[in-house]
Image (cartoon, rainbow, N blue to C red; front, side):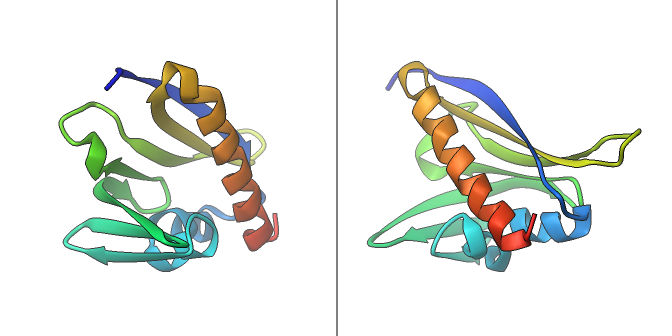
Length: 127
């Protein structure tokens, strides 16, 4: 397997940090926009899409700030995906910063998938 490279995307979200955090860190919130259904057992989240599923360990989270996961297939690597809430100190605008890893030739496709997913999140939130 080729080494995955880190990349980040930033999205402005019209939402309170409290509401946004629930959508990025809880199974019920993630089920609203990220996958069809999410279940959790022993800090392992199972994401269901149509006829497939992927599992990820919850590496860490902090209320109203971030949630970080590692796909089980990426165990033993530095790869993870994180959704971090950032509040602009001047304007108080809320942004969601997505950090993810992908193989060099798949970064653009992976970023486009995040763009699509975040559009769905904005729709669900009403942003």
